[in-house]
Image 1 (cartoon, rainbow, N blue to C red):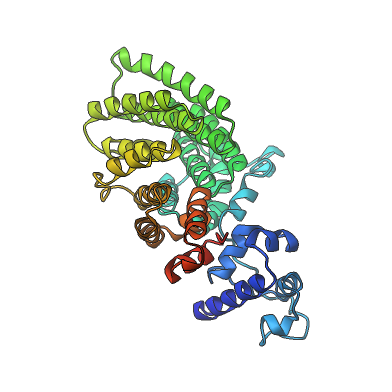
Image 2 (cartoon, rainbow, N blue to C red; image 1 turned 90 degrees about the horizontal axis):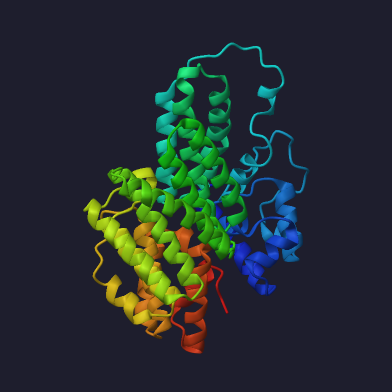
Length: 412
């Protein structure tokens, strides 16, 4: 199935689903699939080649197989047909399910071996590139191979290589935790963050442990366990602050400390505590001023620019749309990752939406979609903002807004 064929097929699935009055989530539940899988199908990203899956979709849509896909074969599918490709983070969820390399526990008599760490290091860097770019389907496929390979390597490599390998594994699990948070799968993010912390400790890199705590706090926020998020972030920030005050104020340590203040600002903003949220933003600003530049230590992208992006997000969460717009319009995020730039545009869209400036809101959301379509199509906040714009516009909704709502499955 070519890319063009996939798009045509996806549009047909979406059309038939809408005729039945179903959302992506409802149809996905009916056929035993995830909403992310169905979203990929409808956008032409995920091919559907297997006859049994085609029949499953047709049954869920209440149509015959030939109505869904006129060229579908009527004979049983040959047993040698190609399996479906992984999509979004479904494969990644499987990777963190259960013990990663059970065969290693069962009396592996193979002597320790030297591992090609350069190849693995490049693979881990690539995982973070995909995470920062919100390319979750590719990320999931990469992790399906990389995580078991790293888990096996840290247990079978020669001892002198193991600390570095544990560090790579910790970084990989951190990327996975960050991706799960953005895809609104916080239960999986919690598991990945916990494994990142354990691996970082094994590597002997304490700052990586604190970076893992930051990822865990984000998972707790998305789970709406704000007390747990505050506890884990605050205890880590307090310990690291004392460490920094004793003269251990490297840029790397400051980056992690500032990031912990930012996640605490998010916690307080979600709790509606305006004073506490602003205090944490101010503390993060002070840390960023000490660093004096935008950095990407531990893939946190901490620096003066990211602090202001987070200030916009906190202001939107608190309902302070005017403040968010004032801050956001002064930010130049061109040097940051696609994810950070798209996040700023998404939050600006939310802020304009709160002020019922629908034109400006739509422009921001469309610009964010151009940068990171998977974020805007799957992020809870983005879909909520789009849905609100549709409600405000009513029957006068523009074709651009209607099309965006359809792509994000965010109709009212």
